[in-house]
Image 1 (cartoon, one colour):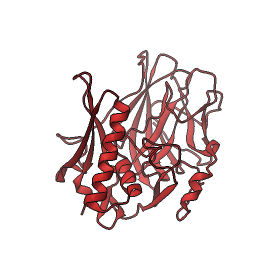
Image 2 (cartoon, one colour):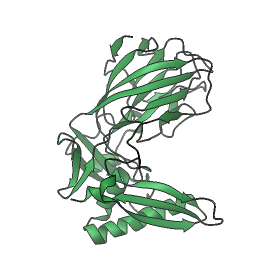
Image 3 (spheres, helix red, strand yellow):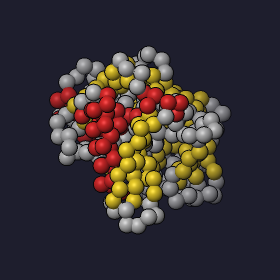
Length: 312
């Protein structure tokens, strides 16, 4: 086993199996990464919300890599063991016109900044504190399709999967499509709820460390992962105070998700005196969307869970 530090300048912004590897490693090796927030430096602390109207989308998603893992070949599985995360000082969440679950409800840019040096939580408001639970929003491998491809949306090789349980201690399994797997990661979040409903978590620069292994001759159809939490619910940093839940019924899961979030935004405005914009951001960085039932035709249920522990 060896340890490697990936040069911070070794980034790319598209998936493309023709990109030369930034680093070649043996199975069992550890790689230490450091990546910028999702806009690649276009957003900086204190920038006005208007910056979100003028983003250069070709500079979004600066990913560290690609990492070539020796011995990985098509038909194998790449195992990525997630060892550690360290958010770097600050983060942001915002509303970007044209994006998000409620893009037709929120048409103006809006941005909030977060201090990530305060310990285990960060403040949306003095009485609203969000537990820091860092992870990479984007982790994946190049496919055998001819690129380049945008990082948003995800691909067969995973990528922009925004799965908040891929934090320290988890193991991610990815199908291998090309020699060496060509793994990349970035787009890191200090916190995010399931759904990432406004299209941003708490986006932040991050230092993180990963260990790579190859499972030979075991092909999988898509990404899988294993993670560890204490017995009980899967949100241990939040669970102690319970949840307030809004639920929407109907034949369309997407519309139900929208309406559950709309109802939560309305409740946050009435009960917690939050503006619609801040309520939407809080839903994105702290609340979880869940399918409550999908068997009672013709109306399915989607619920939004807001942890009451964020209110102090």
